[in-house]
Each structure stands twice: as C-alpha cells, then as structure tokens.
Length: 296
Image 1 (spheres, rainbow, N blue to C red):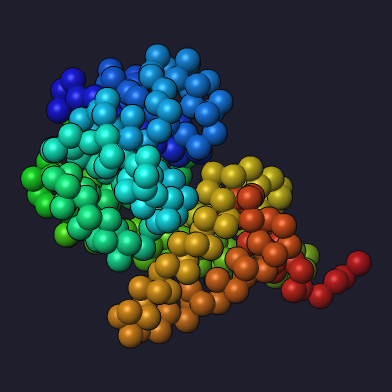
Image 2: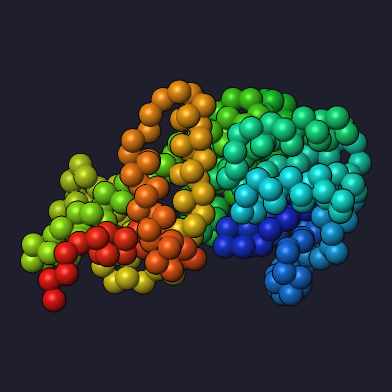
C-alpha cells in the first residue's frame, strides 16, 4: 500500500497521535474532525489536507480510517448524508478503529459492501502512549485479504496485529479486553482505599504490587495516578463505561453472567455521576472514596 492516500476521520486523544504517525511515515493524509479548528491546526502541523465533509475525505482517499466515540458516530460518518460512502469510489477500504458494538460493525459492513466498499474493524489497545509511539495492539476483524491490504498501515500504528476473525470479532475482543482492564483498575482502586484507611505506606504497597504476581499494566499506568489524583485523560472514564456496557451486552448475547464487569460498571457510573466522566478512568477510585467511611 505504498503511496496510498489515507483519509483520517477523528482527531481526538488517540486519532491525532495515530494520524501523526501515518503522516510521519510519508502517507498523504486528508483529515476531518467534528471541530474544524482542531483539524486545521493538526493539518498545518503535519502538512495534511482538510476536508469539509467525510464524503470529501473519501473522494480524496484510497483508505478511510475512523476513530470516534461510538457506533452512532461511525454509522453517521460513513453512511450519513455527507458520509464517506457518498464520496467513495468502488474499492475504497474503510477501517474503523473506534470501539463499538460488534453488531453495529457488521451492519455498517453489510451496507458498505452493497456499495462496493470494503470494511474491517480494527480497534486498538495501548492508550495514548502507544498511539504516540506506534506500539498499539490492533485487533482486526474481516477477511484475510482486506487485512493484508491494511497491514502496511497497521505496521506504522502498532507493534502487533491480531486477526481475531470475521468482521466484528475485533470489536468483541477489544470489549472483553477492556472489561478486564476496567475491573483490574477497580480492584486496584479498592486495595489503595483499604490501604489508605489502614494507614499503610501506599508507595511501598505499589512497589510490592508491581514487583509481584499482582502487578499489571494497569497497576503501572494507574497506580501512581490514583495516589496523586491527577486524572489527565489517557482514556476517559465515560468511554470506558461505554465499553464495559458493550461488554455486558456481549455477555448477555452469549447468555453468560459477567459479575465482575457489572460491579465495575456500578463504580464507573458513580464516578461519572460525581463529575469524573471526562477524566481518566483511574478516577474510578473516587467512587470508592465516596463509599468509604469518613475518617476525618
């Protein structure tokens, strides 16, 4: 796919960094963002073109990547009145790197396919540091041929691409993986609240956790953040709540209980209601602080 023209829709925390990696690798980019000023500033810094609509993005591109908040946005941006499908030539490849419901992915794929447009889902994990360094893990769903076509792009964005299965299976893998991350963070938060109330040295406790079998990527990324209460968003709490809800929907479709995710959802909902929805999901600890007895 050397020399492919890439359209990039969504320049948020993840998208702006991922698009920058592609620009640095020499791909010709046309971008669109809901806030036009953000797109113009990003394009000026990275020598990219700005389109007025997603349809114009598609008209200027061989591949269109979307990475936005939810399935409704993906559907509108690809299939809506000014969506990418309106400006697409037959053979366009659309890659959705958002995290959305597998059923929505399959429905979008069916409608794009009727217009001669290929579609794969490729959500990512690795948060904004992975996006900036190009070390994301990409969970791809679609045909082997379509994923092979996208692989040169994935090689720039990630350290590992996993072909999870047919269209929608990348989303299923991402949702279940995120449910583990969210639950891990909730358990870590509970431990830190208990330790604080017990008068333990929290820095020492984190050192023990990270050096033993209890250690995890979450403990390394979120432990210190929880102690300092500096919740600059790498992954917004409300976005994680959305993903946990979708994971629970997936569990329901499989007729299988997911007790831990249900408990984690309750905590995320409490933290969101307390005003932490736009902060990093490490702020789940605030819900636990509210529940703990006041010792002042």
